[in-house]
Image 1 (cartoon, one colour):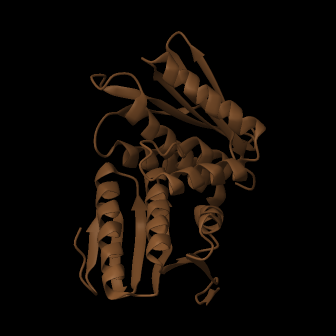
Image 2 (cartoon, rainbow over the protein chains, first blue to last red; image 1 turned 90 degrees about the vertical axis):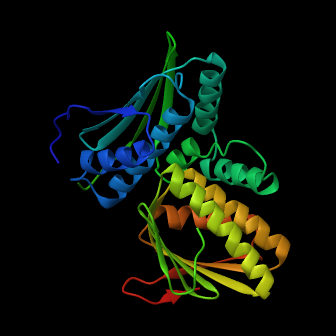
Length: 161
Length: 129
């Protein structure tokens, strides 16, 4: 793998039944030359972010749910989701989860959430996507909320490609 | 998704096979809303069947299930919860080369250690409990 920065490949996610499956194929192509572990992690991140965009971003009338970008620079891979947010509360909730992941033992955090779901099967939202990205995918997460736009960035090592 | 013994059922990119009365094999990927809905329904039907037949253990081979979204993880959580209440064991056969198997199933087992068994397949076949 060259150390030269790769231009970000971007998927404009439209709202339809197979959107997440489209996102999965996009991810596999974007990092097809990387290690199996990296490919698996990027696919997970793109699908989880894609599903969140479809479920929660903007309004259902918007044709586009948002964009997901993938780029590789040196031995780092970055996945970036950008979407319009209609509810600042939702953006603040995402920011709080990302901040919690950043300062916590991620396995314990993931286990605690699964335990909540185990004990309360009627909870309306699983809210596992960002936790899985950090726990299974090994990503560091950050997010920015500005001018009604939420950006989530996930980065991790991609060695041995 | 009604499933009969020995019949392979495909829902989009997910393949499901009830290979014996007490063993389910899952393969492919699970990411679309349709597949999620059908998968949850399948697990509910299977749970009722397991309870009706009073099976003590039910095996789930996920070795070839390469990718699932979070909804599927939640479906597994719900199934483990139902199995724990009903008193049967779920034995998941996993692949050590798939990251989500290695990481998430160990956490799933920690939710109900007496209900969940993990049988990790060896490279080249076979399994180690």
